[in-house]
Each structure stands twice: as C-alpha cells, then as structure tokens.
Amino acid sequence: MVTPLIKSFQNIVRKFFNINFSMEFNIPFFFKLAIITPFFCSIIISSLLYAQQNYNKDFIQLFKQEQYAKALKILINRLNNLYEEKIDTNRVPSDIISIKKMEEEINLIHLFVNRRVKSFFIEDNQELFNLHIYCGRCYFHLARYNASLNHYYQSLRFKSLEYGKDDIYFYEISRVYKKLNKVVPYRRTLEAAYSLNTKKYEYSLELGKTLASTTEKKKAIFHLERYMNSEGNNIKDPQLYLLMGNINEDIGRYLETVKYYKKYLKFKSDDAYIHFALGFLAFKRTGDYELAIDCFDKSLSLLPKGDLFRRAKACEYKGDIYLNELEFENAIIFYQETIRFQNKIQSRVRVKLTEISKIKEQIRGIKLALIKDRNLEKYSEYEKLMDEQGMMELQNREIKYQFKKVNAGKVRWNLAESYKKIGGLEKAVKYYNEAISYNYQSNRARKNVINLSLKIKRGY
Image (cartoon, rainbow, N blue to C red; front, side, top):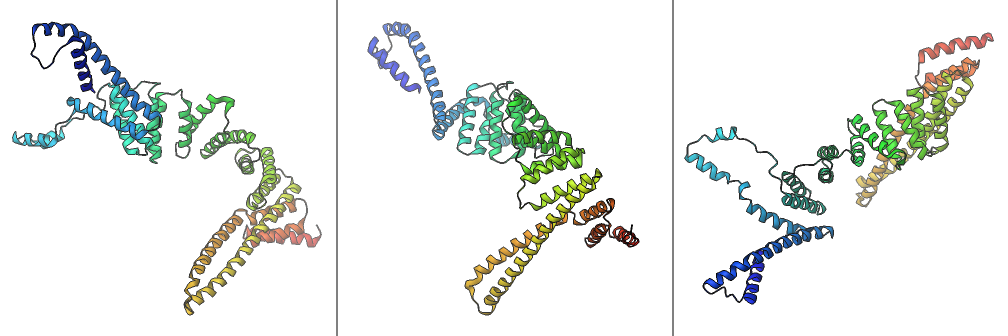
C-alpha cells in the first residue's frame, strides 16, 4: 500500500522539481528537498489515512453485500499484518523457555505451579475490535460457528464494555450458541446482553421463552411479565398468554393460570382444549364451579367428535359438580352421558382387537408360506403386516389406558348414589352392581345392594 505512494512521490518530485534520485546529494538539492518535504509528508499521511478508510469501507461494503468470503479474506490479511506488528503481545515459544531454564538449572515444576494468568482484557484497540467482530459475523453467515465464536471472544479483549451499547455483541454470540444447540451458554450470553441493556425488552421475551422449559420458572415469568408490561395492550401473539398460563400452572399459581388462560381465550375463543383445561382448573384447583361448567359446555361444543376421552371427562366433571351441589337430577344426566362415551371407548377396544386378530391370521398364512414353501417374495409383505400389527397393538393400549382414566367404576358408584338420594332404588342397585363389576368399592357396594334390595321388598 505504501510503495505505490512512494513511487508516485518520486515521480512528482522528478517532474515538477527536476530532481534526479540517482544523483549524489548537493546543496541545491538539499534546499529543494527541505522546502518540499513538509508538503509531501502531509500528502503522504493524508493518502495513507484515505487508503485506510477505503480499506475499512471495502470489507464493510462486502459484508453488506453478503459477500462474506471476500470480506473475510481482507479481514484475515489485515489481522495477520497487525499481529505481526504487535511483537509485544507475542509469546516466546515455550520450548525455548524450557531449554533456557534447564540450562540455568531452575525448577520448572516450581515455575509451572507458581505461574500467573494474565487478565483476559489486553487493551482498547478499536481497529482490532472491529476486525474480530466482522470476522465473527462473516464466519457466522458462512456457518463456521466455532471460528465465529473464537473471533467474537477475541474481540472482547480489545474493548471496554459500555452499558446500553455493547449488548449487541453478546446477543450475536448467543445466536452462534443457539445454532450450535448449546443451550446453557446460549442462555448465559443472552442474559449478559440483557444485563448490559435492560431497556431492550426483546431480550426478556427471548429469555422468558427459553427459560420456560427449565426449572427456572419464576425467572421465566419475571422476564415474560417485563416484556408484556412494556407492550401493554399491544400484544399480538396470544401464545404468550398461553405460555404464561402453563408456566404458572407448573409452579402451582392456579389463579394466575386462570387469568392468563382467560386472556388467551379472548383471542382464541375456539380453542376447545384450553376451554377444557380452564374448566378442569376452575373445578379442581380454584373451586369456581360456575366458570368450570361454562368452560366444559364450550369444550363439549367445540371438541372433535372423535375425542371421546375429553368428552367423557367433561361430562364426568360436570356430574361431580352437580353432585357436590346436591343437584342430583343434573348429576344423573351427565353421569349417564359419561357412561355413553365410556361405552364408545370400549367398543373401540373391541373393534381394534378384531382388527388385530385378522392381521394376525394374515401374518400366520404368510409366515407359513415363507417357512414351508420358501416363498421369499412375500417377506416384504410379512414385514409390513408385522409393523401394522405393532401399530395397532400400541393404539389398543392407548385406548385401554384412556378407558382406565375415565373412571368407569367411580362414575357408576356416583350415579347409584344420586339415584338413591332421589328414591330411584332399583336403578341404584343396578349401578352399584356395575360398580362391583369394575371392582370399585366392592364391599360397600354389596352392602348397599343388600340394604336397598330389602327396602324394595318391603315397599319403601
């Protein structure tokens, strides 16, 4: 960069002052040189500064044009030149030190144990800082994430951090860790960015989302609340309300959960599953029966017809509420509706068992052909049917598990209790017997059957 400028300087001097650089110095030459030197020195310095500015513009312009490889080439060359000039910060090779120390008969182990680590920060150097930052950015865009991290951390050795300004660099580092799927350092550097600029509420939003899946639920709530309070009524993403509700439920803050679920449902009033979840919370956790019944009604109107499990549970919970409120007629209505859904789930189990037995018969036939007739062409069909059988058996286990969770015995017991309260003794006996068949409070159910049967015989 300097050599062309010197040659230009020589040409200008030769042309305008008639100086021959090959001749020996004489007095007239000395006076001419004394006159022109300050002038041309200023030109040279200005030219060098202008070249440096153009150089900076070159790699920044290439970066903005997304020509990262070209920009990186300029950056690395410049860094190499600068580090060659910074001889004070270069280490003497360790093998030279070891040999010298051995010659002096000094205890190397003692030296190693008593070594001192230098501070990470070296000096304020804006040029080196910028070069490393842009190297980190270029490597990031080129998907070379480890190299990107190296340059980002190297850049921090040449910059005193400023609050409210340098958070962007830690945020960029967090993006690199996120690409590498390194969750802990990603959160750590994101928190560093937040600590350097708490006015950027976007950091709190991102921190809240990433902390929501950890054990640090309260910290997640803190950050999400900060962001939501900053937005006021301008929150456009209802999923934030849902996320806040879920986190609060995880730590047992059920009233807060109800609050955020309600806010979510103002945006997504057709979400049957959240209506169902809110109804469950209102019934089981907060005791708000009015809200629970309203939510269960909405969920029953919105749930898919094939979702027999939630339909059965919604009717069961409504029956429990009416039973607790001593409204036995209403309790009977919803318990009977629960049984209707339970019977449908049972019929699904029977249908699935029939399908499994049919496919087993097919597998037996193909297996016989493979073993007896050596018909190897049927092996692919055999594998396919085995996979289908496995899938059907898994589905059947899931349906059975659902049926177990709908509490068939308990519902029949409560139904018998409701009939007994309103004087329907024969039906009460019927449902007590069904509770026995499901092994639910069998001893008490038998005693109740005996007592009620005696009452029926005696006519009261």
